[in-house]
Image (cartoon, rainbow, N blue to C red; front, side, top):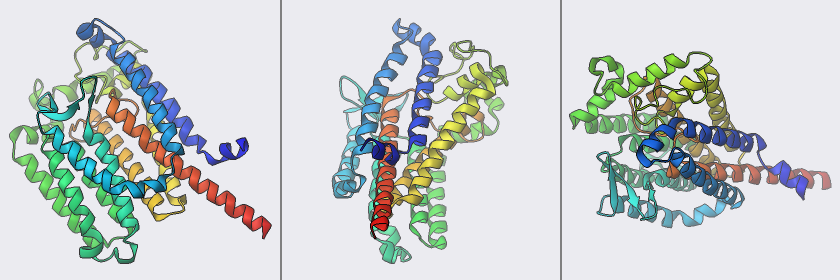
Length: 378
């Protein structure tokens, strides 16, 4: 039995997650102890909270790794209803506003960001629906469009918070899942064009949104405004160079770089540990996405394949958006870096998501083993 369990698990994925989560916890300590002391008179304030989140996330990962993923198909209706209810509650007085955005629900003892959970729930919903529509996926009106009506509703509610980054991420993941479902290229191009136009018009509707999106193109044009955060990130990376300034030796975390322990933690990694530290993060993140895609190709059900692909694409896009923002390649969207950025909601939902992928891997390996045993008997 013990040998069977060892073979069923994807130990490359699990080991990489443990390494990256541990490394992220250490870097959050380094990036946040100054601000923790200043704001809370406690240098390990953020480290301690992230450690608590990590303990909860570990339990969640193990639970969802063992929970049969096929059962999510029976929970699709409650999942969709919960998505709308939570996103609507955020926009009521129960929602908590932080820095001009109302994206959190205040539960008294803690705050949660429902959009983080909704990202996964949308993937489960689309994987379920499109796995059942394979016979007519080439028909736009019958196969492709109906599930996207739900996605558009969720997109609109998240835009109302406002959270353009998360809303755009959900649209992009939905498009990739439609592609993996086998839809026609023309349908994909049409949907992509319409989505891009909607996001562009929304960004143009407020000057500050457009400035935030275009600010990365020339941050030095507004050094103390829209370009300030990116310039400080540049300085951190330049200071680190190849070998880094040394663990704990970051200058930019001393109130120069905003969100040093959250969205821009990669800049602190680069400053303290240099190119080698950044490469370690890249390799771990790349390996997690790669294993997710491999598991998707080996899944023994269409639902399992689409679920693994959707989760992998979401994590990959999150990585690209965060790294792109920190390096000035893409606009700053406020998307966290998986396992690295401080934040309970993001960490827990990433752990749950990868727990589901680990369960798909276990299920696929078990099926292959059973088939092999039957072949031997035969």
